Image 1 (cartoon, rainbow, N blue to C red):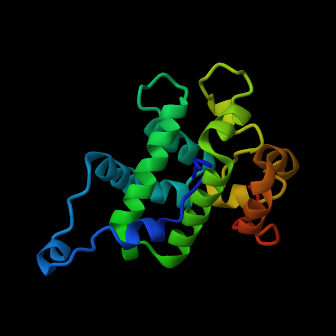
Image 2: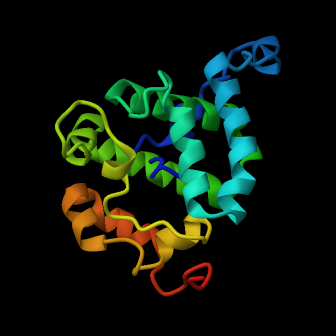
Length: 189
């Protein structure tokens, strides 16, 4: 989503040994999810239909409201790192309940995010150099419209791939490989 949102660690490795213990009781009773993971899960449940079927701006707005913990209309580096950590923990908690295609996409996104680094990505996007990322800065290379966000991001006419590649540096080929330019999900309306 954010492009929400958004950078990354291989979560399968992180979650693989999380519940491992020598005795069966420890394996049978995994730790309950943290409040941050539960909040992220509620966000995912609420935003999934919006991001899948409604205009892209609504999806971005939902993601922005979720990430903007202090409700000041901008995102700090700490807020972005918090969402990234909640996403990773949520992925580990949900595990195989996440469809393989979705799990792969999110994992690749986390890998790209981590390749670039939160600090570098934030500094690159924060063109005003205020230490607070605006929605306009985040979306500088994306033209939202009435299609769902996935269709917008796959449409080469809606994303300035060249400028985005400059911002992503060495991670650009990975991102380009994740996007299939030849098959946008929907035609422009």
